[in-house]
Structure formats: structure tokens, C-alpha cells
Length: 277
Image: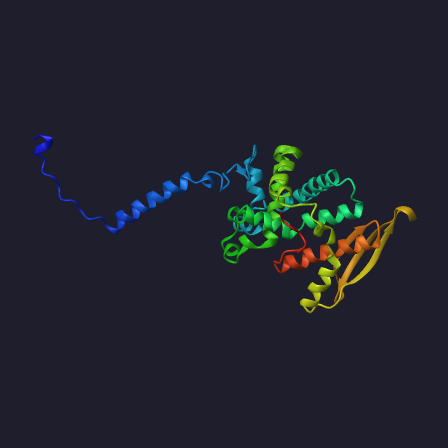
């Protein structure tokens, strides 16, 4: 039978299933063409545009304790967070030191504090959608762990620590520059007006926790180069410590540490004075 002699089959009306499949195919093709489709989610060995030589470091940096406990593992992001906190502080301190040769030690400390804190890191983590990629237990996930400031900021520091171990200080510096420093203006005058003592007082009063009390617990060095260690108390318990070359700076650092701890417990960001570009 020739092609022209073939009796055409009656055309069937599209079913709900075929319509749905067609729509899914259309949106899938469109999604693959979007710029973020290939870069939005990290692969097993890359995140934030950095590809790991040792993918195990990335897995560790993204693993919360709840997930590790569920899987009878002791590997979590906490050790990398410890390292990443120091690397982040070093890179930001160096950038500020070079960018502001006119700043005093106290001014550099204030500028660094306004950039390296829970609020800033949480802002960065949310902008980069980091919460989507953290390994959590089902319970922690349902409890909102992916959006918790304390977890997001900790994991971001862990990723920085992992990049440092994998690629060295140059790779870590590049990452911090791209995702942190490029988005904040250290020349903004408001970063020099950080008042952690005032913020702590306001926070404690708002929570009905009384007034903060500052106490010098240690002094070291000769008279012209004293270093002071200060503890801040409220309701009979120590909530923070700080170190500085004068009592005022030490008290500010103690207040900052107290805010980090208290607001981390309440899942609130620290330092409302950080200013994005």
C-alpha cells in the first residue's frame, strides 16, 4: 500500500496527561536556557564559582551536626567554621588596612566589626541561596534550619575555611572579595559609628534582661602598651568577653560578643549598622 492510499487515523484530543507533559517539557527547556540554570546550584565539587580539588571538603563544610548524627557520623562543618572565621577576619582586616591607610587601630577594628558579623554573613548566605545546599536532618529542616541566621553564617565561614584548605589563601581571598567585600562599602561613614554597647543595652532592655555591667578582668603589658580584657555581665552571668588596647575598645568587643551569642540563640542578626552598597 502506497503512502497516499493510507487511511489517516482520526486525531485524538489531548489528554490532561499529554498536556501536562508538554508543559513540563516546555518549562524544562526554558529553565535550561536561563543563565542561572548551570550556576545556581553547586555541583558535588563546586560552589560560589570555586571548584574543589577535594570535594570531601565541600561536603564537610555543608554538613550540619543534625545530619551527621542522623547518619552516625562525626563529620560536621564546625571545625571548618573555626578555620574560616579566622581566614575571613584576616582577609577583611588586610583589605581594610590597605584601603584605609589613614585609619587608626580603633577605626580599623570598628570597620572590621561592621563587616564581619552574623548579619553580614547571613545576608551573603541568603543572597547566594546557601541554605538550599546545607545537609540537615529532616527534623532540623522542618524546623527552619535552612533560614536560621546562626547556621547560615556558620556554614558560610566553613565554606571559606574549606576553600582555604583546598586552594590556599589566594583562592579564599578571591572568594571573600567576590561574595563579601564587593557588596559592601567600607567608606560609608555609618560603619564607623558602630556602638555595640548601645545595641546590647537596647537588646537587653527589650528582652527584660536587666542592664549590662562591664568588668576589667585582666591587664597585661607595660603602662604605655596595656591590653585589657573585659567581661560583660547581666543577671549574674557572663555573656561576653572582649580584648582591646584601652578599656573602651575592650568593652565594645565584649558587647559585640554578647550580642553574637544572645541573638544567635534567638536567630536574630547582629549589628544593624552594616551597610550594603
